[in-house]
Image (cartoon, rainbow, N blue to C red; front, side):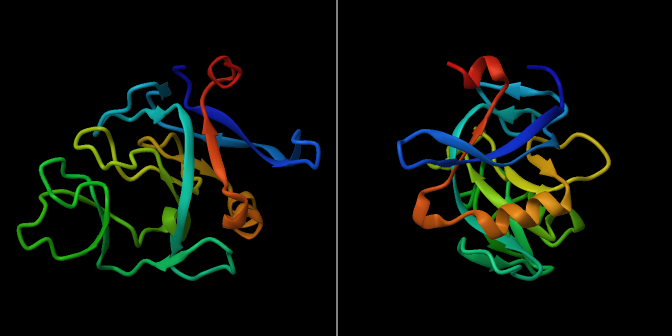
Length: 175
């Protein structure tokens, strides 16, 4: 639960409703505080659960089948729990609409996938959890992998298959 090191594998459903590994395992990093069942805003943990992947984003669409949004220098993900725009993509400037937001046009997000773990955008339950490029260490709560793996995933994931990401330690996943 407390490690920031993880493995990522991609699985595809087989004709007999089983699963086969399509990719991995590859090394990944998660939040510096490890995994948690109750993620909170500003705490560097990665939420445990099964989440949808509704959007890919970054600087230039690599040809993904996921809905794509290009991040510009004005693109932000609002992490201010007091804002009506909490846990959503917005365009700066804030103009009083929020006091805190994460920049989306950064090198780690050259290509990224939104992990929709807080679908109701409940204040303080956490925001801006993405699958993105690996940096120099643990993340603030996201899942990070190397460029080759992320680009493979962006090419492979098909929204017609209702993709999900399952996050957690083996003890939680096997429940």
